[in-house]
Length: 205
Image (cartoon, rainbow, N blue to C red; front, side, top):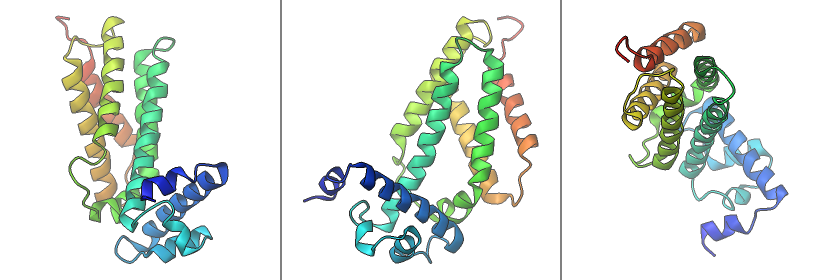
């Protein structure tokens, strides 16, 4: 039975909670001990399961790192999707500001993960391409709504969403990895100003 089949065979509630426990334990241990020092048995000990249980869900330590990082991406995707769904009933800029506050708070809360794990991990360039594409699509859709409602300049939505997502993600991760104690309020204010400068209607619009 291949690894994927073994995962598929364990899709009950107990298995899902075990997988989540392994992910939670992996994040805690990797942040505490660092990428190189952490062993699979450290993760399973923290999760309170046998070492063999790990291999029912993940083939290697790198696989669990990938899964934790994918969970971070999914959380951000969920936040963006929730914000986009509110645009029909709320002010565009209030929604954008609230989303930026959420993104800043989340990344700073997990900054040790980026500093101690992601900084030393070298996934292939295509890693998380689907998640990034989904994020850019959600942002492009939100910008189109903002244009239709007169809140945004008439920009190329696909290119602008790509640039905004890359700039915000890259900036937050760089700050998480290089600054010991980032100022969340100042960072959020700077990002809000940046987004407004990119998207606000010009005098000629």
